[in-house]
Image (cartoon, rainbow, N blue to C red; front, side, top):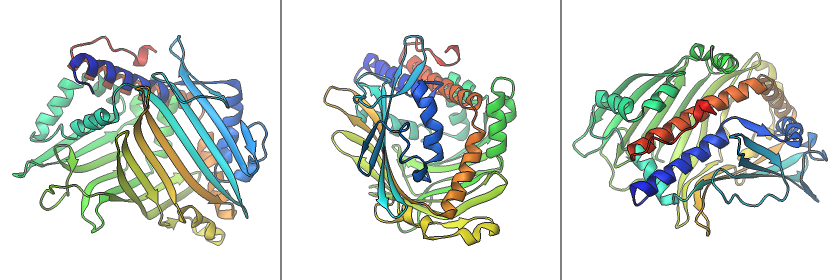
Length: 411
């Protein structure tokens, strides 16, 4: 994260502080408090908000725009407020969120959004190098060594995450080609949060216990490079790396990583009283490597096999196919350098939706789940993850000879 210890320490502190502030407890301005629930309810059924004069900061023919600016305050709070003239973020922790809704005709709409968060002077290349170092941390080590390293090098992070998660097991296999395969099992225990985060604990127990996810990163010949399986509040992860670069889980290591990978995902969860899910949700994952950007571009262009209750089969329509046509559902996440030396984490998103009975039904299920996200749930969730990010920043700063990095629960 820097050419010297002092530079790396300053860049690390800025980077993790910006993430923790933006992802931690938020204070919303009066107009945003009014706009946000309308915006959420209209995400899949945009006709509900297209002509709502309260939601948008600009209206131009078929295009609607909402701009939200964020910044840390002197008292430690993070303020988000609707601000149509918000400039790009220029100082650490500042953010800008721009949402566009365009009417395409025939009950079809296009969403485009861009989120920017200024994270300091670390270059995209340095941030990417940090990612590789994290992925390489287990290489050449036994499972017992990895667990001991985590406790010794990341004590604050281990304690913060240990309020919810247990690292049940870590197993490694070190190969002659210098690659290392790592398998670990992490269990989640929402009951532990009941004392400090009671509302967040209840929400996790209701929505994560019944959920199952299976995500595989593979090449286009079907060779897996990583797998994540979550079931019954237990997470299983398998990866293999060499010098921090993903390698096939089986077979020989490759001198050159693939230009892109395919992400195959299946999920099943409970919304309201219904079990819903999808199989074979496929996405193309393409690295972004330019002189000013590092990150990934992800495109979903293939409609999955949906799993809905039999009672809603009569609602099925081509509307569920619409998001996967043309450009598809697209997300781009990069670290981007600007001319003034500030780096931002940028997330761009695109999706088309077509209103129909099945989409309105899904929207109603999402609204039901969102109604359980009370102010207390959201604040407790944000505080938990902000504490963990602050802890990680403090642990890394201490590795560079400085224990002054602070934040987290004292906020």
